[in-house]
Length: 194
Image (cartoon, rainbow, N blue to C red; front, side, top):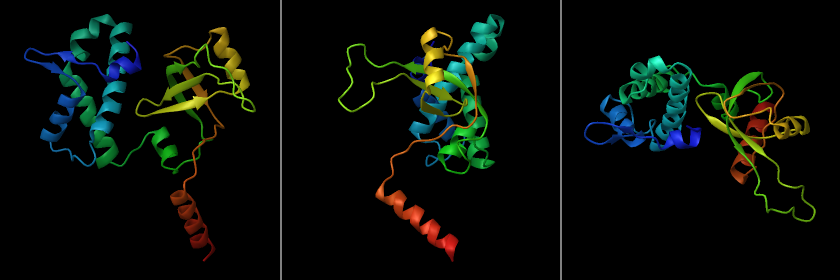
């Protein structure tokens, strides 16, 4: 199972399939707020939880009946909701994406996907040729990562594969700057000067 296929996974329950949509219903019945447990939030966490559970079952098949069921997946969703929205704990990637921590901080991320450029694509004049992109996760959120030349060589040798963990330090983030974010940055600078 891949992280991509895990996101659309449905358990075959007795009456009907049980997937991310049904898990969202369970969260709402348990009192979770729709403004926080959005379909997008549930779909993201559902995929990563199912991918993790599938890995656990593959590694230790005797735990199949204990962990590979919809109630366990929903329990883990509730745990994540509690940690993130009630306790205010956030994962490493979430803190970086919210600009509360520098992207240079050390972290351990797992490779959940390798996105290769199409074989027939040719570089545009004046642009570098498209390169591989890794989809990395801290277990809670995913991010796409462009590789430096050393990691490109390691990937081409076949040493990096989905499921491998990378110890990362000194990374940088790339984000398009919008007019809104420019004004926010300028406001923050003005406040800091006062």
